Amino acid sequence: MSFQALKLIDPLLRTLESLGYDKPTPVQQQAIPAVLAGRDLLAAAQTGTGKTAGFALPLLQRLTMEGGKAAPQSVRCLVLAPTRELAEQVYESFRRYGGNLPLRSSVAYGGVAIDPQLAKLRKGLDVLVATPGRLLDLHRQGAVNFGELQTLVLDEADRMLDLGFAQDLDALFAVLPAERQTLLFSATFSDAIRAMAGKLLSNPVSVQASPVNAAARTVRQMVYTTDKKTKPALFLHLLRTKRWGQALVFVKTRKGADQLVSQLQAEGISADAIHGDKPQPARLRALERFKAREVQLLVATDVAARGLDIQALPLVVNFDLPTVAEDYVHRIGRTGRAGAEGEAVSLVCADEVELLRAIETLTRQVLKRDEVPGFEADHRVPSTGTPAAGAKPSQAARRASAARPGRPMAPQGLPKGAVIVAGGKGAKAAAKAAAKNVAKAMARGGRSPGGRSGKR
Ligand code: AMP
Image (cartoon, rainbow, N blue to C red; front, side):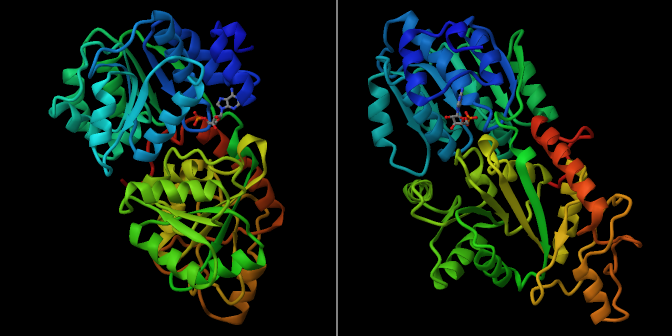
């Protein structure tokens, strides 16, 4: 199917051609006709599916075809996004796709001065992309009028709820016109999301999309077991010996991100952090420098990294495992894009075993573990689940148990009989099966059939 077949107007087709988009992605094929027809939409789609163009293109087209312009302080089309970075990215997409159209768009989020946002609103906007908190502030100041609102888009609705925006959203929904088109995009579908969809959508078209390029299928996953205190040294060692290039490095906390960046910089490695404590301009600057390849490592927390569109990333490192298993799937989805080979490396210490277990349960795989001599864990990190037949303990494990006679393979409190899967035919078969499962999990938006397995 072509973009022409989706009946997009010439100015949009010209833009798409100049961007090198040959054909619509599955989510675009499903969403564009429905949105053009004015239908509500319930879309299971995460970053990487082309979802942004899936709603931006038809909305830009409708606004153009209807003609007219927004009255002062009015907004014709509103897109709500969970984070400043995602809001900025979606706004950039509207600007890019709407480059040949006479429409006014803007973006509003917290953490930066409100005055320029007020000034933009004063003239009226065809498209406003905003985070819920700042938009509510603007509304309370009487700066925005929703009387002319035609379409509401909720992008990454699940993440908006995760970030505690439920109340802000309810307050906003209460002041939007009931008569409108609503599009809801979410990677996962909890009861709360379903309830929200039930309340907001009227006879919606359902859209389901797996990532454009099935990222996970091409992602090699690896776990290195180590100790908490040895992690930074192991990371540096791997960085140098494996000659890692650019990588997105995930850590658990904001403090952890800053600490790691300092350690790396002290070693002469260019690194920058992106997390919620950083002022917005600094976050955007870090992202731009990383995209421009001026910085080798971008150290991020999950919240800050969510939704970021960083293309052709060869490597994702989980310096800390995520506390929510689904985030593992989101994280590794940052690599292996566009069919490129990608690698996801996780550094796991003893107190992350439960997290690893949750990830393995969610993705239904046994992750291949290895150790680097000199950086081993004091305690073995056991494999979970049922290892594939024929799986053997790793060389490192055999070496470790030979070197330390009498030391149990599995530390106390872990299941008896747990073994390390790090090599052998069985492990290869397990890894192959696992890659398939991750691809499926990504297509499901990281949700296991039995529901969430990670702790919130
Ligand atoms: P999204 O899922 O909206 O974050 O988009 C992911 C990436 O895919 C963005 O970098 C888009 O520019 C790109 N993209 C979206 N649609 C297409 C398409 N039809 N062909 C090629 N690339 C696309």
